[in-house]
Length: 381
Image 1 (cartoon, one colour):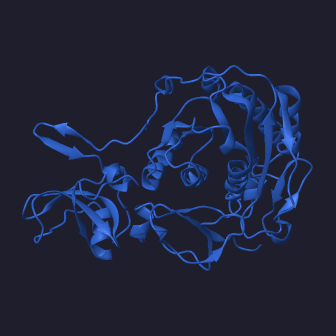
Image 2 (tube, rainbow, N blue to C red):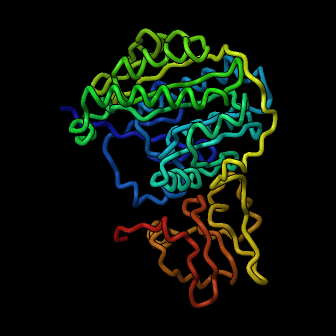
């Protein structure tokens, strides 16, 4: 069996800078690499300059950009988008970049992950990407029903039977069964029905899975159109030359035919009438992340928030920036105490190739490292 490819997607608001590779046909910042580097030991990865994402998974971002350019942007100034099953954050960061390019600051993206064990990874990846317009939540899809008609687009990359991951994940092969397909199809219907009230009339659902099962793909999108009230957008032939196959209601990317793993995606426009919740209080969702936080006062000190350094809104005039070599950057990411004898005392932003990594407090003989413990590199550096 052919080995899985390795691909990354560059952050256009931090360079773009990152690994070089062959362009992904459906992603302007996607790159397919010739081999797999040790991403953990690349400071630019920790700076959020790029995200490691399967090239097939980037197809959802392509469908989203088609909506942005052709359908959504003329209808509304501020776009509200929900990434419903967002962990680990690949599609979230892709959506965020596309929204910022199309709308500037005029958007809100809610990235939700119901699984508590996975939401921390999502939050860390959103922090590294650095877009303050992304809100991170961890609630059941049904919780969004109270935000009636609030979202212009909902992206639902739902849990599935995982046939598209067989090449990459042996456990997916071991766990597959016809009963699992049936279970997943029913769960997917429940997820769509629960979140449907949150999508405005005329809004769009991008529905995707990483399986090849029609029961979980075309059949479920057709069910949503008929039972919930929607119009399926016909799949397009734009990337057939690169192996993307049209199914009855969507697009199929099959591992071994395209460079990446398996993915299916289709688009539905909501036709059912819907009340509009003009400006709901997002605090009812108990967000883990909401907006830009520069820091907080602790006694007489204003202590910078570690994520502020990673933000695309970071103001370099706020702190002295100290650009370090790769080994020093890795020591910072290992959460070692650094010595920066030629710099002034106080809070400093550590940068690598001009890209901020985080903060230290220089106390003279050494610097206290302010990198969050949960993000430290565990490998030897």
